[in-house]
Image: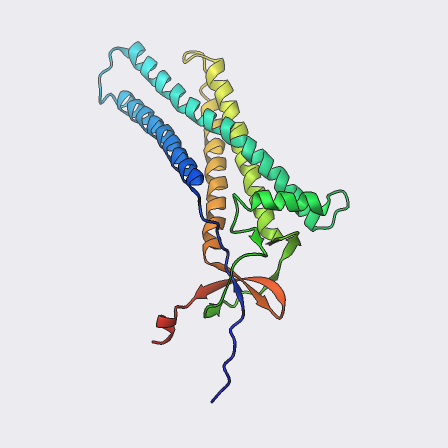
Length: 253
């Protein structure tokens, strides 16, 4: 009878149970963003039906007033989102920079400050910063052929430097989107509808939208990538690999 070979220990990315306060905060956040999205959608619908003359709102002056009010509401909501989100973007950018410098061995960035920064980033990015005290579990795995990559360590946290750089680049893009939004607001508020230069809107709108969409898309892509990730110990060296977990019931077929 062949000897049974123990499967390699698997450290699964264990997420802490969300307590009631976090659930309430998440629900409040969903309601908050739902209200903002509703305001934007309503303003866009009004703008569309007025400009296409589906609804008669009066003469040309009345039409211009409806268009201006709807445009200012949409711009105001996006400006509010930029003002409330950018402090987080800036702070997380600083934290990623500290982590990268500390993990690279820069003398001016201490391990202690790097560990604190990694601990903070592990909350918004748990798929990147993994605690070495994560729950151990054993399961059957099929590792992909991707090469194992060595992990950087700061205190109790393991992470890939390339992914931290990826986050920092995404935050730079999001910060640029906020700056473009501020320029858009200055343009909308500095002129009335009659004196507003027509060439500025086509120049500012595309980069404003693209920076926001691309930055958020990059972070969501990274989060989705981390959902199926596991961390294994290969010859005693921690490495990241993309793994597909095979259920015992499926492996027996």
